[in-house]
Image (cartoon, rainbow, N blue to C red; front, side):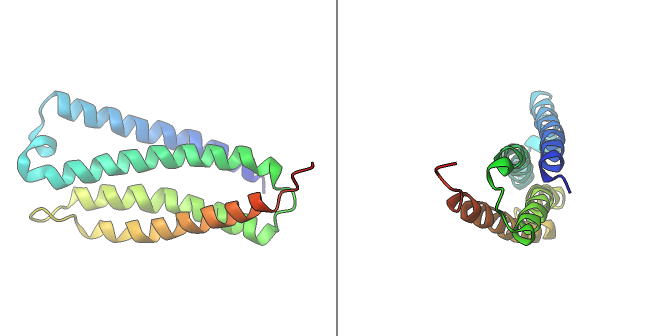
Length: 142
């Protein structure tokens, strides 16, 4: 599998999706839509803003991950695959959990979708750990 191509494609499409979400949030703000701006919807506004921010950042992480893969030639295939799938999972679970948590907020608390966020964070930590370990093993002389 060509992980570089996979993560470049995923990263750029993620950026498009989450930057579009940010634009939609700006439009909701600009037109003073109550579903988004009412005080009773503060939790929704926070959750959707977090979904936009985390999704956009993770899109950039995919691009950085893809561009750094050329330096990890000795990376064990099993770790490579784990890091790749964990990053994809984090990119779905983290912003998806925030968005779902805001879609069904209850009395100032996020909805059950927020339970996806810790799983996404764990997946992201796995990717970062495996990538940091691979970066540490790169021969500085080559």
